Image (cartoon, rainbow, N blue to C red; front, side):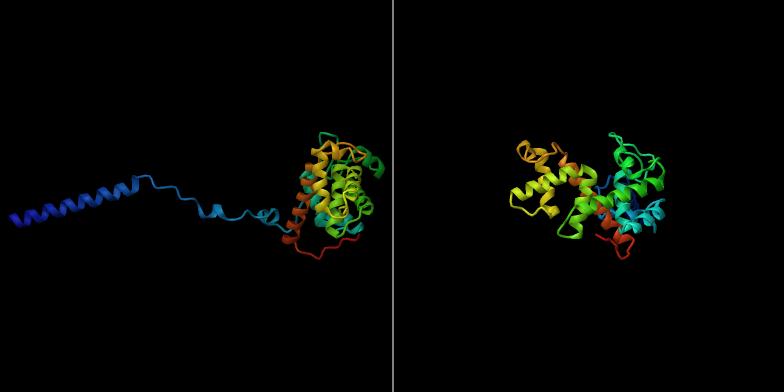
Length: 232
C-alpha cells in the first residue's frame, strides 16, 4: 500500500469510528422530557368515555317513572348517578338507602317496603322529587330544578330559610345564583344562620350537590340528545 493510499484508509477509518460514536451517543444519552400531546386534550364526558347509548342498567325504569311524573329521564339519571353511582345497595352514613338514597321517613311516606328494590326505590324517589318540585318556585326551569335538588339534598326547611334571608336582604329569592351564595353564608356565618328557623346547614355541600347534578344532566343531554320533557 502506498503512503497516499494508507493515509486515505486511516481517514476513512476515523470517520467510521466517529460516526459510530455519535450514533451510540444519540441512542444512549438521556433525552429531555417531552409531554405526550394527548395529555393536553380535554377529558371526555362521562357518557363519551363509556361510548354507550345508555346511562345505566336501570334506564328503562328511570324512563318509566320520569315519564309518569313529567321529567326528562336524563335529569333523574344524573340525580341517581350523584346519589348512589347506580349502586342499588348503597347506604349512607345517615341511613339513606338504595339508588335514590331515600331516608326512612321518605320511604314511609311513599309506602315502599324494600328500598333496595330498584323499581320501588325509583318509583318512590321520582314521586318524592316531583313533590319537592311542586313546592318551590324559580325564575326559570333551571332555577326551579336547582331549588328542588337543594331541598332533596339539604331539606326543604333550609331552602325556605335561604329564600327568606334573600327577601330580607332585598335580593331575588327565586334565582339559584342568589340562593347558592346565601347557602354558603348560612354555613359560614352564625349571624346569617340565626336569621332562619331550621339551624345549621352544610351549605357548600348542598351547592356542590346541585351543581354536580346539573353538570351531569347537561353532559347526558349532549351525549344522548333528545327533546327534554319537564312539566312544572
